[in-house]
Each structure stands twice: as structure tokens, then as C-alpha cells.
Amino acid sequence: MRILILEDDTALCRGICLALKSPEREIVLCHSITQAKESIQSFTPDLFLLDINLPDGSGLDFCATLRVAGYVTPILMLTVNDTELDMVNGLENGADDYMTKPFSLALLRARVEALLRRGAYGQIAATDRIMNMDGFVFDFETLRFEKNGQPVELSKTEARLLQVLFTNKGQTMPRERLLGLIWPDGSSYVDENALSVAVRRLRAKLEDVPSQPRYIKTIHGIGYQWAVSL
Image (tube, rainbow, N blue to C red; front, side, top):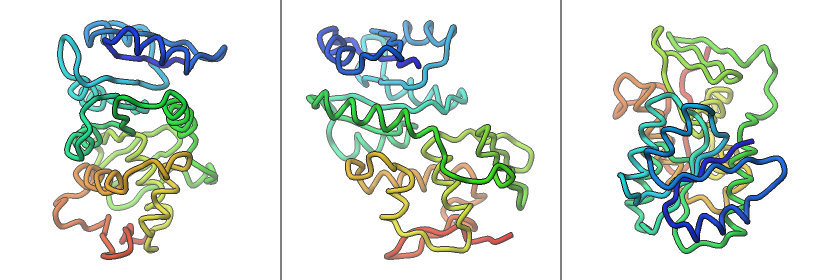
């Protein structure tokens, strides 16, 4: 299992490496976006830890670039930018989680473990993993998603949200329940606004008119629902 850390603070890098060190893990350190891009030419990490302010650009832009390129690998942003807008921007650009500096290394380790475990999508029968309707094809085993024959790239958070809503289509899923299902190992640390951001991103990719969603409905005061039944 490989973790790529993109961080230009060498002292912090040493601390993170000590916190995450494990015989089963390979940690690849990069101090610039250029180094990170070179590294992923030869392997695909199981997790990205990205600083935002880097010598040759923004880790936020690199995060967005990874998503556009089709990477569904979990991404954890590490930054001194701690305003709500900064966090929303991070999530909207494809991050799965966000930690502000300074942070507890023990908490970082817990967040990393949660993200690495999040690859398992839950107990769904194999025959139900590929689902078709209204021009959509959702394959939750291979993370292949299509709309009208065109591929749709989803982050793991978006894919998990889609899976929970779609497999419970016709049912209203309360926000608290969704938080627990989408972030099963760390929902108590996740800002509730992260769910709104994930819903907005998913609508932008699946709905013809995201501002007037046909499928992902908001049930005001409760949560969300995939509104179309097979």
C-alpha cells in the first residue's frame, strides 16, 4: 500500500512519516507538484496527502487535475487555510477530507486509516453492482459510471454517495444517516457541509439541469432521495 505525501515542510514530512509508518506501507515523499507528477507516472498511490501552498503551484489545483484525469484515489488536504470557504473549495475540487495545520498526528493517523478503509463499498450482492436506468450505467465494483454512453468520473466520496442513494431509491435518506454511511469511520470529524458539497458535485455530473434535479432530490429539513424508481 502506497501513500504519496506532497508537502514542502521537511520537518512536518518527518513527523507524518513517523505517524504513518507501517511494514505494509510505502510512503513516497514529494516536495513539489513536479515531483508528484513524476512519481505517479510509475505507480498509483492508495492515498494522496496534499499540501495546498507549494513552491511550484497549488495542491488544490493538483487535486482537481487528478480528478479530471480519472483518479478516484482518496485525497486528504493538509493546509494552514482554515476558513469555511477554503474547506468548501477543497471539497469541491475533489478532496475527500481536509485537515488544518497545526494538527494532531494521532488524529491524522485516524483520518488516514479511515480513508484507506473506505475503499470497501459495503455489503451489496455482486449481481446488483451493475445497475442501468435512464441512460445511466453504474458499476460500483469497478467504479465505472456512464451517462448516455459517455464516461463520468466520480471521486470515491461521490461514488459512495451515489451508491447509497441509488440502492435506496425512493427512500428519503436523512443527512445524519448519509454522513455515517459515506464517512463510516470518521463522520464525527466531518463537517456536515461536506455532504452538501458532495451532493452538489454529484448533481453537476449526473443531472441535465443541476439546479433543477430530476434524480437527486432534496427533502427539505430531512435529507436526500434518489427519486426515480426502476
